[in-house]
Length: 60
Image (cartoon, rainbow, N blue to C red; front, side, top):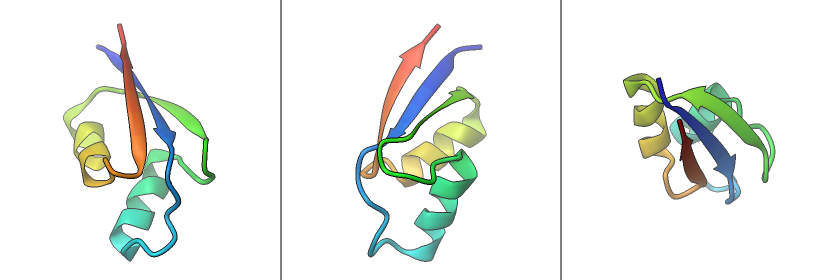
């Protein structure tokens, strides 16, 4: 399964609470933090919800 690296590039200040919880469930707590996840449909759906706050890089 492919892996993705998710990096938080924008602040979560002034975002709805659901987006803040989505960032935390992805493991992103601080600005500039990078986490690695499997590219499962659940994770991709969470990334899509906060796509304006994160950058995504795919690896194989």
